[in-house]
Image (cartoon, rainbow, N blue to C red; front, side, top):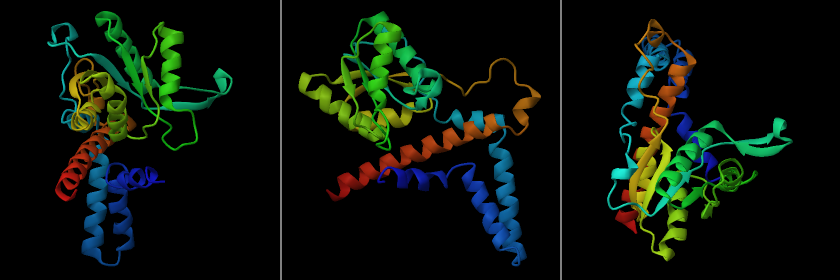
Length: 259
């Protein structure tokens, strides 16, 4: 419940819920024409704007700024590759009811495998059962790592429910073994928040982002300027990550201020 509440509240501060809230209050205040009308116009305008791929990509550009890393040039070389979970397909029918990795985690895991084989570094997988009623993501990641890629996860951090906990619990496993520096593998849009969490947990982070989606493939077309679900998803991701990072920074500041 302590994880669910902030997730639900956070949804109302990002699209599409944010403009819908303006629209709802605009309808409720319809009799007060100037205020109700203003909220209706504002909500409609925001909903259309957030649905434009060109706007979504621009917003993602504010969070996807870690850049691609050439791991062979990083000195001194980090000691471990840490790859973060992100989604599960629970009770997947086509797999006989098994819990299997979602697409986002497979993208991260695939890139982590590439780094591990290239650099011959050990791998940690991190991710728990977010709502406590399914298999911890890290265990499914470890199984996939061995079955599908022929690698063994050296550490399985399976307690975390948030990125903040990913960092704290991963550090608890690595610190006793003298490991202080890591390659951190996650999506490019998730990297700023993840990096902040791991660095404040006490680890030295070399970002290894994957799956950049800020740049359109090929030349922009008219579709970039028409409302679409893709545009809304990109806007949602960017707003959520920006808000999440600011929340982490505020929580960290309050912790140091009042402890």
